[in-house]
Image (cartoon, rainbow, N blue to C red; front, side, top):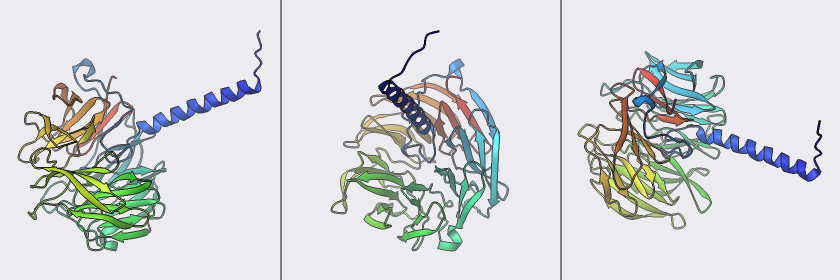
Length: 421
């Protein structure tokens, strides 16, 4: 038997190799998660995922199904577990499921009294947030919960409606929470509580600001000149906030003249200091440059009828934005515009409204009719490569993508689609 001797340098090299390998493995797991609304970077993209342009066997492979109740709250994924927030009768339910099998690990519920004024869906709208072994949910009735991610046990809860006056809006409270450093940020909406900053560990209020109504767009984060910022698109318009101090740095009105209107697509951060905003109801699309030193924004361009987003946030690909244009109830198209000037590069034929995820160079489109569509991310043309039915009507929730699994829901079930099974 041959014995090999290792010198000190050899041992150090070996330890370094193991450390780098473990770190790379750990990073790949983290990057594979979908822990919040719009994914790991809150921009509708999963850079590390490789999704083919075809379905093996010609149809989407449904790995498992799980019965759920009402709601437009999309799934989130962390540590190979799926979490879904929905409503069954008069209970809001948060469930933890196995990513591969759909097996249930735990379930938590609380009483809800939300009634939709227009007779639409009465379940939760906001997508949960996962951060540092906690999951945060915000219900349509105004209840904010923090639960232990592993056990589902309650850590703290707040009634933002009763305690702070968070307003109902047209279709219930729907803004998904975000954490920037040590602040949990909620677009609560209402007089003196337009935006709330809370301690993620205790739920205690750290700051309150603005009288803005919430609308239906969720906040995003950026960093300019080493300063972290929260970017909010409320019903009234644009807010740039210092999340640590709870101070408004820039405020700009950007809303429709008609009262029966909302801003619903979240802002898209471009090159850290540029923000794309879009809404229907005559608002249109615009690109803004944030001047953090002088505390102002400059309009780079504004267009109407080029990429007017009703509720789905577009994705950024190769200097272009790809997303849904038009009102959901009057007809929509998928369009690609040039970020530099807002000009249309291509547009699809009319197709049902839905959501878009970018995976590498693959567009994953889920229509409101429950059809899953794959297409190449391309700045010159739109060409569908595969399509198949996976859900029923009224599929509006933002889906999730993690480790080759595509998680999506309608009002009756959550499905797991496995790419390349």
